[in-house]
Image 1: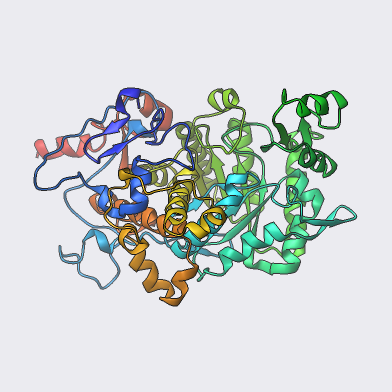
Image 2 (image 1 turned 90 degrees about the vertical axis):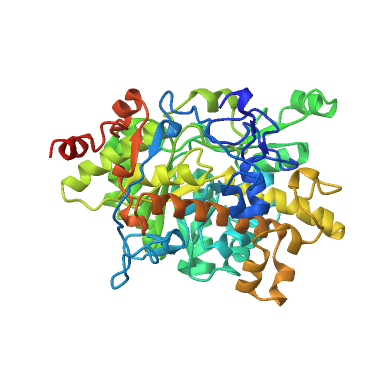
Length: 546
């Protein structure tokens, strides 16, 4: 998406910053006053599926994303007859085969199945301050919708109030807050997943969680992410806090213990200090050693009592991808999330993020190829989640089709965070006494919202749906950011239902790679998805020659 495409007149959307192919700005701000498609969907919901100003407009597609190799260069198929996945005993007539009847529920897992209402999950929301500040909106919104949310790495390690005894966690109030805020509204759909990195493992996070929450929490081993090929980072602006984190065992850059750094900090020449996590497996030099270490880690977690275990990996390359798929399958893990380059970040070295790793569509195409090799040998393949720049319902469909039948979920980062920001900003205006608590950034409602009124009932299209679910009394405890997440995901859900109905697929397991085609030959070559006019060309000619 070029700078000239910052504005979409059909939907009435605009980008504050530089737009990217996914439909978001390169830099997404918590205080943004709009108005990209995700931002407006957080208020208006499914209305954003359609051109604005109905009755006085016509609209034509200006899509030019079918160049190069990306998810934008894939097209979604539509068919003119048939219907797959219609429930047994249900008529296939036109009154029953309608898009609201498309079932978008999914499930993943090996022995223990985890159900989700929408085939989405969040990216890892870890130790960044923006994740902590807006967590109530993220957690409550995802629990209400019925999708998994991931507590990212280092949450315990950066918590000043956390207590360690002999290097192991005995009290973790921030981690408890995150888990309990989700479980309060958990109704059997979704999951709360907690990541483990090197420091978390050393601190005994897995032991703490299983002792306190049992198997209500899913644990995730972490190999990497798409935004960077080093460990997680945050920036701190307090020298005292930087020294605290150094004492907790983190890598600090620059070193706050050095007198010259302290002096530069006091004079303002250095204003921030970065905290970094460590690389994993640095003492291993072969695939066999990695496999043995990984299997031992999984066995230890199972011995502790974890019944659901997942793995998150990044865009390292083909060897690491194959290792992740093979080892996760052999270990009978419940989920493998593969994050391609092009995903989001709370804080990653920018030029590293821009230039390292395998782009999402290429990584995911190879993931399907490698998973198929295992499946063709009769091996059971781990359930997969694709991550790396997904924002809209068409991208969700393409990702599910790309990895079918192995892909059960699409992992989304900023696209689920944006509604949390927006709702919190609205709440800070309407309830000024809570502005500081919800980290609201606005002093008044911006005109870009396109709403009349100043109450949540008048602003959020999903308000009464949430009220029906939780009851009138409980609405006082629902963050506005959660209302916005519900509303935005409702739009994605209906958009996905419509695309599936057009492809004549009425359940998610019916989606397959035949439902997408390549818009150029390079994409066909790299993904194995047939070129758009080659697909079904043989059947077309058979009709003509009959």
